Length: 213
Image (tube, rainbow, N blue to C red; front, side, top):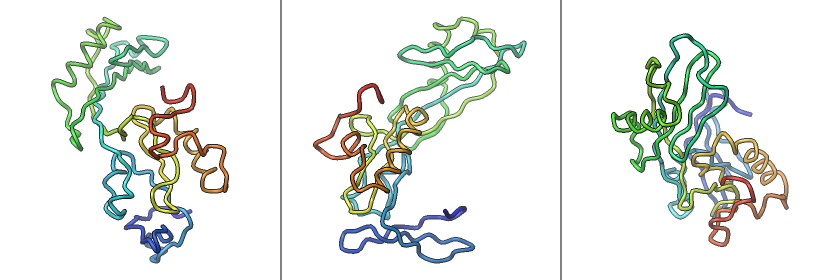
């Protein structure tokens, strides 16, 4: 394992991804590998070092999140509250995380008044107590979305390229499963995950039962 390195690109030979150029202040050389895992999140579809036909169909989907705090530093709820439009995650120190918007805005990560208003409005419907909470802050990030908003986990268009992206709104939830799947794909010639999230036309829209729904 190499730490603190920077990937400059992947050189393909005979349409096989066999070399990763990883400059490192200790290494300073190319690293040759039989597999390269692309896990670049919302930027997976804009990796300039891949041939255009090999870039996965991943787009950025903006999400704004706000944070409030109860005045007595006590949690305002004992469990997560959620609706179709918003979720509320209480913390033990009285903070409340409210998220998240779903916006097709490219790579824009600005926090907007409209986004904050939408989150507060929907949060108030679930928990009117938010009206009396203190403001902490707001942030915005980018999710990796796909045409059907299902993950792309499997072999890519170039031999040796493995995709681990497109988790959309379920990145944290699917992380352990995706990590195991990728490890199996790289290490096993016939992984048990082969038909689950294969990024191909035949498997477009498929997902294991109960996962990513």
